[in-house]
Length: 238
Image (cartoon, rainbow, N blue to C red):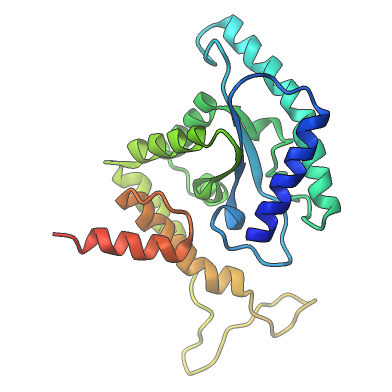
């Protein structure tokens, strides 16, 4: 993860020289395993951009036009960064969870609204697909935008038992690959008979639980081990 962090930052630095980016605050975000400092050698990209506009997105028609104009400037830059990371062995995301996706190149207010929709009306499928976004971490640019977004997320989650229950139900939907008598339940995938997906049926069990504890206890850290340790400390504090 540290290697990929440095590689990503350097790629962004080189791309910044070649593009005339707007003079507004912006930040490159990492999601998923990269956001948790838990990437392996074989991994794809999960990233996005958060930016601000002078007028404040969503206030009026002119502000919306300005926001869209800024987005259209950032998108070619983001696409170039994504392609260069791919050339370095950091694969393009098949699910298009990348900064070059207009839905993931958003203003602070747009990101806050996206998170608010997930929290206010938690849909199990949407939460399952969107949970990796709660592991966001700033990599380059104005980190205060990511910190502001995290504070907003904690405010939205606080006092929302339905959201936390939905997150817990999603986490409990994946069971350990254990049989009844000292055996393992292997995948039925024909290309890999007898195999066990350690990410889905191993690491994910802890990642999901740690994410829920962190959100419930207001722990800003994204790494799974840190989340468990810090959330535990808060739970055990009188």
